[in-house]
Image 1 (spheres, rainbow, N blue to C red):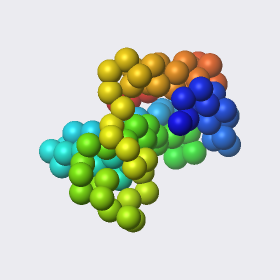
Image 2 (image 1 turned 90 degrees about the vertical axis):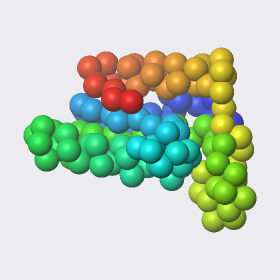
Image 3 (image 1 turned 45 degrees about the horizontal axis):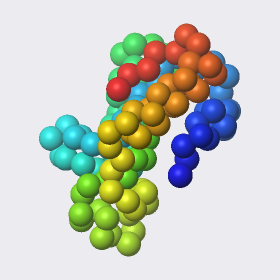
Length: 116
């Protein structure tokens, strides 16, 4: 549903000088499996290390979850799940979305480090 909107979305972020972006799609989270949008803690945790150990200022980082759905039936059946309530996007459609996201990021912040 957000395909075609990635450029607009990256401009929603208020900081002009982002140095590091950590991205997840919520799949295969550290042995926990498919967490879907609930995997946001992983990019936040990784960026905390970039800030604490790498000296990157906290306002220069951006955690991202590409909410492409989930194959976790428990989450799909949970009324309180905040992510996209649909089966995980796969194949060419998935890679087109990721490519669109990366092009939008590179256009807005040409020198940013993107960590998946």
